[in-house]
Length: 447
Image (cartoon, rainbow, N blue to C red):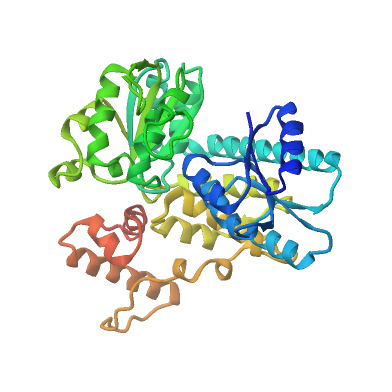
């Protein structure tokens, strides 16, 4: 059921809209002012919002960035007096989906809200398909291990899995893939443990009953209960507060929990997938993570490889994203020159697959004209930083290619000498990936 917020201080208009959209199957919340919006954002993320720009306690437009920060997918439709074009332009620039001039016919509002709901669902569907399409692109040995792992765990519906890997390496994508291909029948419910304030995280996870604490004016269902018969994805588990880790451990052991303010236990059946980009064993040593919880969630561990260690997978992902964004943006397809492909293979990709995907989208947006080739001049400057200059090279005779090869080999030898022969460290010194270092060493017959 799509969540619709109507932020409007005119009670008769708000009630009329509420009744109309409840009949259309929406879950409607009426909020008369900015104070109510701020309080509600603590508890819930809206999906579609009708936002009046003239509210009794301030400019309604000030709520727009907070709504979009809460849920970047939200479709916000602003309502304002006829002819207030400056406000409308400002609202659209700041992320509003559309606008309605007051007074408006109910049918016009209904059509716009239904279109917004369709657009929201289509966006989510495209995002899911894109994530699933690129999740396992590549034939590197590291990705074959990931495929084998997924094939083994998807026959069960109540496992606890720990996915590790650097930020942007695709942990949530793989978690969704496990859910989609697995035996779980319910929803995939995600919670970022680092994004919720400590005081609210327990309520978000376990829920609460009315009157459990000051401000708890109604029951709230926790995400554990929402994920019943499905999958609960706990991202950034390493940032969960210590006090809450013990309660999570008890739940994982018993699959039962007690919402705040309730005296009864609730039992659920679900799969739990945790993810982290930090070293949990180091967190244990630092006293920031429970050892018993680590052993409980690390029953089935999977570590995703960083993109820089996936070799030719980089080019496969590059071509996949080029095709995807051509379709998504309705643009003629782009192709990468061989020089650009070499740069992509050498780049360390600190942001991993997310960085690569964002770069391709950026190139499609900025590329103008009939030339549909991605050239070196189109790439960000940081990707074009060459090997470090070393002024102490002797003069080398011969053609330019021979001189370049000799200089490059000398640089590689110096980096390996500085690192004591450690190839990973040598690659870090040069600002390239270990895979790129090995390719260059093989090209120069260096053992």
